[in-house]
Image (cartoon, rainbow, N blue to C red; front, side, top):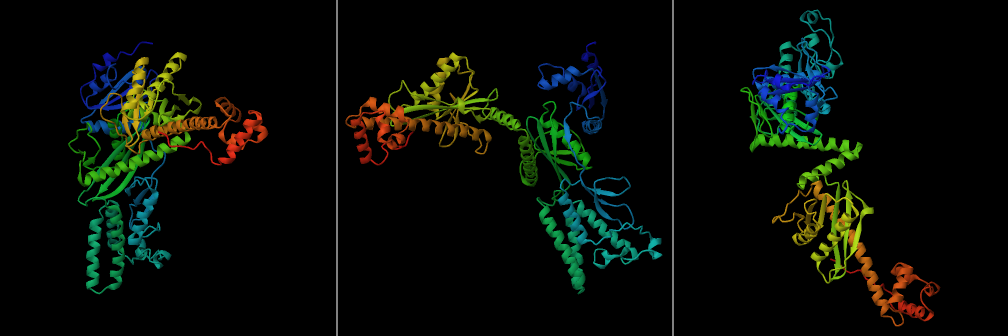
Length: 611
């Protein structure tokens, strides 16, 4: 098969805004993209050193056998055309917009005495639709409030002037209980009914202030005319609307007709939140999940989502609030990145929503696929600790001693962010005299990795040292002697402020106290401390008992060690019977030992604090 000559095609692509399509050799459309400059964008896919050409993009490029394009007047036109084409053709390599359900709408029917109800199906018959509503409970709350304030018909009778005048219909139970004013028998004039419909449209559009203002005027008029029954009914309507507005308004009511977007992304997914604001009230909100296909940037994903949301909600807002600058230039739309004030609060609200949605979705995925959580944790650690590879194998060192006596070092191993207890090790310090924590750390690290190198075992990607600059410097010295200091990332964690130190760095790094990376490091440190202390206490108890047994007349060092080898623990020696002790000691030694234990009821091997 003849190789695709992209150079010949690119020569014919103009420097104009538009949409480009990539096709494979089977004639299948595999990717659709938009561009401010078509030739520059298409060319970027075929430049090997370009930042856009990652592994996934190389696969896409390798399948391209044909390029077509459509020129438009502006970048915004390209943006809208791209969105509609993606939704129609759903190419394999475009991001997947997950929307597996039909959202509900509130419809005001195009008819005489219009009915109001909710539906999931849009019929193009001139009816007015409001929504869609991401939360069906919120939609029902709004619909119930509207019906409580404005009694409307629920029947589907053809209420033409002729039918009403002919007296074809009779009022039903809804009229009797006050849920309808009886337009079927001309008890409610059509203009009065339509005024209610106009108020309802304003409420559903977020224009509540004007409705409340008119209600307040009608209430004052009814009160001045001593029409207390009407005043009571208007007061109830006023209170309902006022409460609804107080729950909905989050910013100054002067902020009108604005779209707000924010994004939170992971390695495989991105989530975009949309808020529709009218007169300071959030009247629509929804979060969209996007599955990445080609490692798209947040800017690209947000641009796609904005187009999708504005099409879905039929939004024509002239101002869009976004978290960062976008390369979109349209004279009819102003993109705002707020730094403070009410618009900043709106953006923060959107960001809170998208972060919560992302966390909830990822938790669901990770429960079904635990390996996803592991990969995400490791990727986050790699990013937070400025590593070049995933820390699948982590080792942590800790030292313990008591006033320089019984010094030990412990190492714990985590693989794929979980303890690997079969790989835990401890060291009896051989070359250090006295309380020298730095020299102890240097010996332990050197012995550990010298052995790994001799046995051809793989090195960890990350080494954690329990301690500050001094311990870290000593550990780094050992790695340097072994010639592996550039092969492994090493950090130290200081206990007091949970500071993270790097070799040679003067200042520490601080991780967020709630970050999962810090929690893993703390777990490593605590596990190393627990494992080291356990071994240290065993060694100290053994040493304390041997020393005390040697002080008993007739029992020397050899006999004391025989007792420990045979009975394994201090408790068992104390609880041993005379025949059992006779298996190790002679008659005189046994009698002496039993008399000693009888005179010393408490355990001589008292646990002492360690460092």
